[in-house]
Length: 219
Image 1 (cartoon, rainbow, N blue to C red):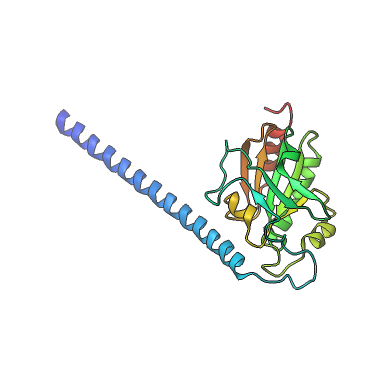
Image 2 (cartoon, rainbow, N blue to C red; image 1 turned 60 degrees about the vertical axis):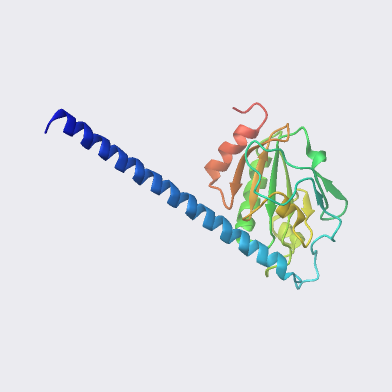
């Protein structure tokens, strides 16, 4: 085989590999988009269905009692600022994001009937307790749209005491932050900037590293 033939064969092989890699990337992107779309459809269908939690416990906040300074759209990303929001608090009072400014914060958006939330929230709470200088706050959303405990029933069963804001039946905070799956947790530095995001249950070692980085004086 001549040198020119070898060069041409090498170029053809390289082009074939690049095309294979390009198609692989396209398939991964398409698969990710389908998963996100399916999750969004499930959440959207639940919100449209309305409903009562059937327990007589805490339901969603009243329409007009919840605000967020961001239009419904794509999920927040690392590097974004948490938008200002207000919501009634479980137990009374009003939650405002501004009240948590200036301190590294774990902000979790969850649904009380979500099994992944029920596993993850105690882990988050324990992790935050083990990292002085970090605070935790959450927003319960999609309340009563599937069978399960009310927010206060779940918190009491786990002995959890972090602040909980209550989203309304339209999912104002849910959609304003672009949440697609539960729980979605934002790790926010003292400037209000999202530095990490997790969705669903997180392995304890991964969660520990995230909180180590978030803590004052962390890497």
